[in-house]
Length: 258
Ligand SMILES: C[S@@+](CC[C@H](N)C(=O)[O-])C[C@H]1O[C@@H](n2cnc3c(N)ncnc32)[C@H](O)[C@@H]1O
Image (cartoon, rainbow, N blue to C red; front, side, top):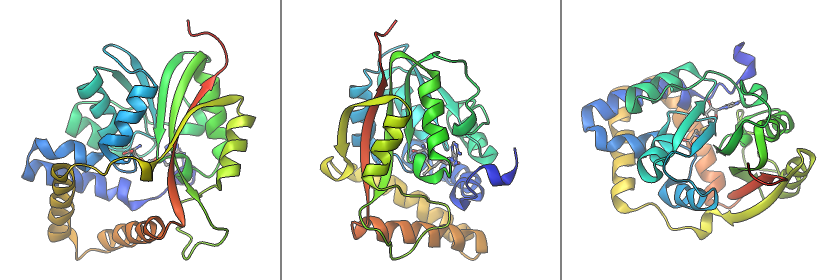
């Protein structure tokens, strides 16, 4: 796979390795908060778990699994059996080091899974980092079995012109997102806004901050840290000013679940 196939977001390259080191220094209890990036924290994960009816032994495909935090949360909280797909090898290594998970290295646009083989999936904060969103959703639709469902956390733009256009993000407008879902042959069966869900508990935020502080202390002088920090700050600004908002959708393939 060429580097052009995937986002070159520094956060999920160098930052992934640094995150593993930070958790090693601060303690394993920091791993979930450190490795859930883009997933909106426990409230959003809980919302998806409820709407996807995750439970003990239920297989869950995680597309764009990052460092494995959401998948590990689903395993620990709901007893789900996650299958991870993630294109960045550094993020895959972090998922293994932090949670003993073994992601498949692949992109959303080319899922290495058979047609109609997946009952439940989620893809959290990923669609807006993929350049071919139509292909990515088409692949999700292809692998879902009839009646199967996928949770999507998508950051959508609320204005035509953003203050800054982050290089690695392609935020659709809400109507584009709906059209993409429609073209993929999927139907929206549940929806919410990230802003309607509770903030992460103080303990979760404290762990996130401790990991961020540790990484800054160790690597804040490097260009890689500065690049990642600038990207995060740019997206943070768009979220704080409401130019970009988080939308949670559950999309389903027609038919009765087998
Ligand atoms: C904001 S992170 C979210 C990671 C994880 N889902 C989470 O919630 O913590 C976006 C993830 O999408 C991955 N990604 C980027 N391009 C992708 C593609 N074409 N297919 C699948 N994943 C992709 C990145 O490598 C990164 O891990």
